[in-house]
Length: 310
Image (cartoon, rainbow, N blue to C red; front, side, top):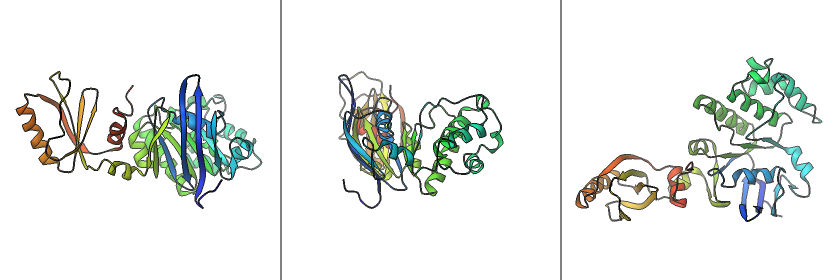
């Protein structure tokens, strides 16, 4: 299997089925050395299952992947030597201290990095002697990342690391992830937060219903809409179909549930034309807002629904 000089992960046609349900349907992608690569999608999209196949927690029904120079099916033990994994849920020995559990994990490997430096890197110095049961949610997530880093892996897999955290704890974890990138680590990150993907990732693979539906840099994905701005609103009237595409400046129209989204490069003209269109067609517009186009809009355009919609 051939690689470009900067490829560290090469995924080839991974498939995972559970009975008739296709969790992952033949995804292909490559991850470059030193980048933060995002797997983005709603719950059930297949991103966690993809990650679990890559790290050896689930066996693919079809396909394979190369990490470093090792095949995940034939050389899993070699793969595990060069990867670190932080899962959504990590069971920890809660009566141990932060320092104790890191030293215990370090003993599992032939060599490891400095425990005191690792604790400092994940901002847990003040908690090094504290028992795990007393840590906050954000502190436990930072500890889980530290456990994944103890043997100095080349590739780090982070599965929704900020889910359930408050905004400040999320930002702290973002800083840690960016510091890892600055040290030359390759990071594969799953998330269903658009802002997280946009702020952290060099490239993003968007997954939906087990399939990879887009892959590019965040800015390029937004540019694919070919529009700078979005108008989002609802109409009170119950009608089967309203054609907003004739409104001045509208390049694309998006709809999900009862919300309409108009994409445009000429926000003021489109807004004026929308108000006139509503008056001419006896429509009452509510919840009107204008904004710059985002990754959320990319997802809505591709799937017809919001990323975090149930």
